[in-house]
Length: 136
Image 1: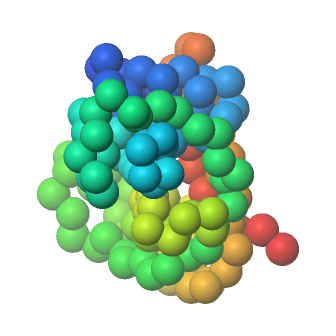
Image 2 (image 1 turned 180 degrees about the vertical axis):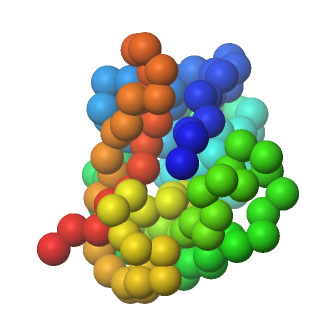
């Protein structure tokens, strides 16, 4: 499946810079010690802007649920249908979720509840993206 090449803006640049170093970082609010993803201008919990920083997290989670896209309308993904869209919940903070297509998992055999870890895939020269793969 063709992957989207990220275009970092000022807000997301620290995230994508870390991905390119094969690290997973999330915004962290020093005022209330809350992680958040995707990046925002202010803390979603307490509203602080000046206390937002970045924190490296362990890239472990589990598959919460999934859907199979059989009739999507995105032209670039039509040739790959059906494909998986899985919701990954971060073990370190269950309020943080990511989406993944789960490389290597057959479309209709997604092991919901299974442990996953972040992996990195090159989508363009010097540009990685984060994906999730089943472990164990």
